[in-house]
Image (cartoon, rainbow, N blue to C red):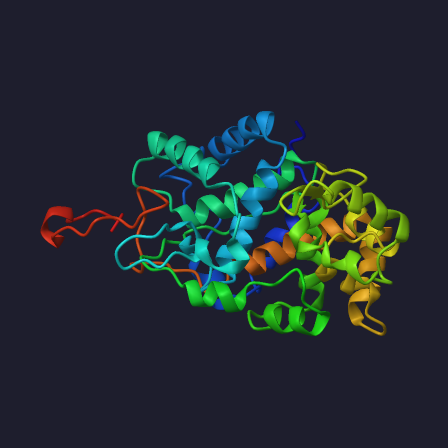
Length: 336
């Protein structure tokens, strides 16, 4: 287990300073000390549950960060991605980009542990944000300061999930458009794509690159992938064939060697004349540059239109909205 204490990390100070000007309006409402009095041990609680999950599931961290990404790109970081079908809820989990998404059971375990220590206090949206950071740290990656105070939505947006989530089949212009819609630039796109330094993808998302041999896919790597996928489209391959469970810069050196697993990965390096090529080269050369930018971009993404104050709620079950109660019975409560 690798744990980087954010207070001792060389990235801590510059990333903390970023809180003053990144996505100004949102950050003015969020605060890394939001739970300092109401749930002071929150990061350690989340870290412990994620660490336990990793003991039996090497993909646990990648699953959690994917949930956070897919949450923030649909109406902001409000835990709407976690809502299952229910009366009035058309779940985002049924959108094409979320088919096969996993990790809700780990979120349930984190929520249970947090509720035991700090009842009706911490939102599921904040749990996703913290769990993503802890997942990266536990895989050997950087730490960053997570602004907190998000609340949970009472609605889902399946149409938004269908339209807003990046596809593994998209070209660079399409990816830039989807990231740009949320104020994320080319550096953010390349840095956040670096989350594919760990985790797996199903063959169904990249096997189209075999049919007409993709010139941006290394031939030897193509044959390796074809062997892996010979057992079916649901088979999973490592995003990073070199250090599959470690958070490092090898994602970018893989792109340089034409070993990006998804088309949407490789286009960052193989699109002629694109500004992303230089960013890939910079991150491939210096892991510290990647780590610094990744933390900065996670802060920006995590602050896409959060619900704060009296908006939304603090869900008691991350998969269900809270039942409505007469206002008088909940007077003084902050979870509705």
